[in-house]
Image 1 (cartoon, protein in one colour):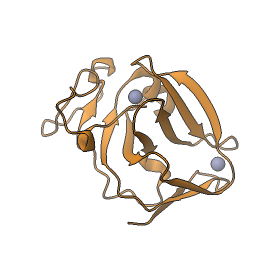
Image 2 (image 1 turned 90 degrees about the horizontal axis):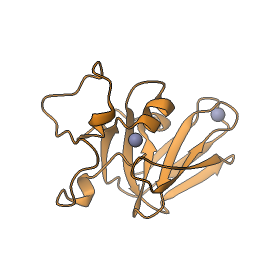
Image 3 (image 1 turned 90 degrees about the vertical axis):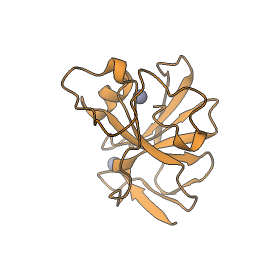
Image 4 (image 1 turned 30 degrees about the horizontal axis):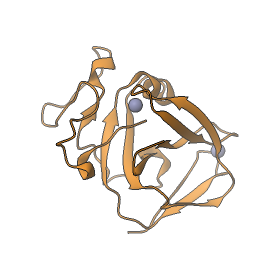
Length: 146
Ligand SMILES: [Zn+2]
Ligand SMILES: [Zn+2]
C-alpha cells in the first residue's frame, strides 16, 4: 500500500510502499515530551522503507527508556515529529500523525504504561504492557519503541 505523509509546514514529505507491521501507543516519558503530554501513536515499518521525497529531516539522538540509542527525525522548521529509528530493531516507528491519512492506524497495544500519568486513558479492550511487550509477542505486533 502506498502512503504519503509530511510535517505540518510541508517542508518535509515522505512516502512508503512497504506494508506497515502494526500500530501502537507508547507512554514512555520521551514520547510524552514529543507528543506534548499524551502518548505517542506510532506505526511500525521495516527499516529502509521510508523514502524522503522533499526536504531533509533533522535528526536527534538520545537513548530511549530501554537504554538503546534512538534516532528521532523531525522537521527543523515546524518541529513536527516524524519517525524514530531504534539502533538495533529491524523496524522504525513512524508517528501516525505524520501520515496524510491515518484513519486505519488504530493502536493494537499500549506500551510503557508504567510511565503514564494516571489520567492517560487506557483502553480496556487492548493489551497494555508496563514496558515493552515480552519477546513472545510476535514482532509484527510489537510497537512503541520511540
Ligand atoms: Zn515542517
Ligand atoms: Zn516511547
